[in-house]
Length: 97
View 1: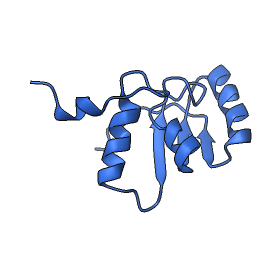
View 2 (view 1 turned 45 degrees about the vertical axis):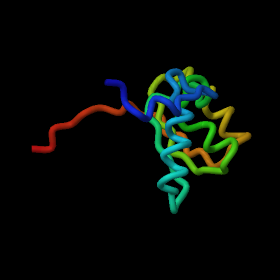
View 3 (view 1 turned 90 degrees about the horizontal axis):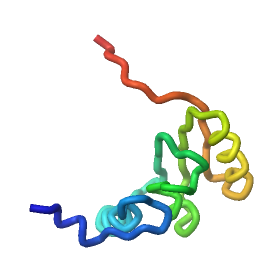
């Protein structure tokens, strides 16, 4: 049986309806800090699950991108949206034990 959240799918920048699902979740559970974090953000807009929140709701963001070309495009986006904190690193799993 499909998840009930799927009825809220809507693509603005996202690829699989995440924009609409996140909007509905945050309408139900507002973020007191208005911060989001996204890994593998490409240029910061294309296929982004959170950019709509930055653009339309003034959210702050930590965007992490490992690819140098995409990161440079992300830096250009940050000039227009200074609430984005760009990080040029590869996110990877570490077993801390």
